[in-house]
Length: 262
Image 1: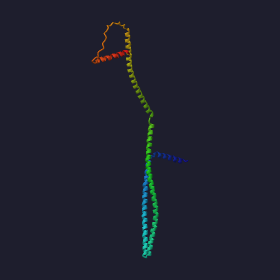
Image 2: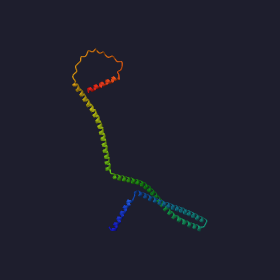
Image 3: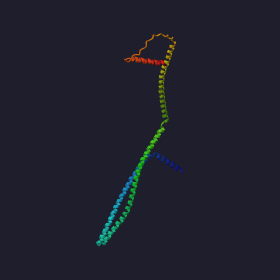
Image 4: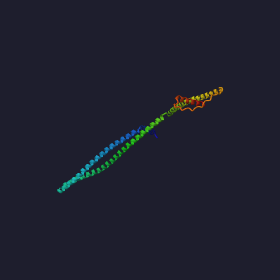
């Protein structure tokens, strides 16, 4: 391979790469639709011109047919009047229009075929443009989705997930420490309350033991003869209700007895 061929290939590859990078899919689709619409406009103009030419040829063919019929009647009229020379001239004029009519008929048939072909092409192009527009919208939606996914992936890859997770771990550790301190405070408060009741119980035991020790150290008491009491008569039923102070004193004595028995 020659040097110039290599240079040409390198330049062509670089240009192709630049063109590929410069191509925006969305803009390219819009441009393609515009070009197809321009072709559609030109094709419509061509179809309109072909139809106009066809109409003109049809009129010329109709006029030629009318002339043929007219000179045919003139020839018949001349023969009826006995003027054979005039009848011959009429037939010659008829032949001229007959040749013209044949040429117009051939041209008209060709034009009719062309117009039908152009109409079919026009319908096909309109259908392709409609399909292209639909496909363009679908591709634009896919392009938008792809760009969003690419942007999201770039954001995710650019995020420092390790630092974010470490921050969450630090916050979780602080919450755990706070919960532990609250639980410890609650346990200490409960322990203090239990300690106070334990002290009360221990103090009561010591007081009881001290009272028992004092009772042991006292000398025994001598029995004193007591006079015989007369039999106690059953108490008469009191008609009045006990006072409230007596009820309270009785309940207090009962509570004291219970404490002494403990």
